[in-house]
Amino acid sequence: MGNLLTNTTYIRKKTHQTMGPPRPSNRPITIKDDKGNTSECIADIVPLFIILMDKLRLEIKATDQLHPDLRDLMDTMNRLSILPSDFDGKLKVPEWLQPV
Image 1 (tube, rainbow, N blue to C red):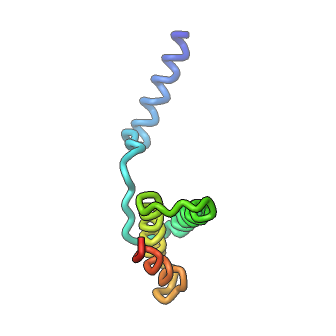
Image 2 (tube, rainbow, N blue to C red):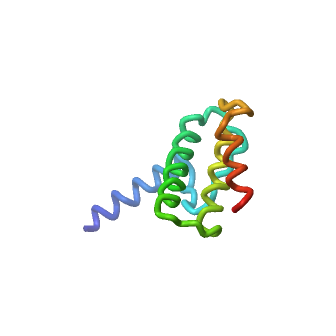
């Protein structure tokens, strides 16, 4: 058992030296522009859209349950630079957010 702890400690020290200290997982990552992270933005948009559609299918209409996901969807779509400003999704999501 002592050998396992030694190996784990060694790996943590090496990881810390090469990659820096671990980042807290609950700290939000703010990206104002996709800056080459197009795949990451798309990977964020797809589940948000699916979650919203599932909530609507389950007839969840409470503002406090829909608003955060709509806001996240809008923010993520806005930071995706490959979408033109007149893209239908970019125009529709703010319309959905108005009544909420």
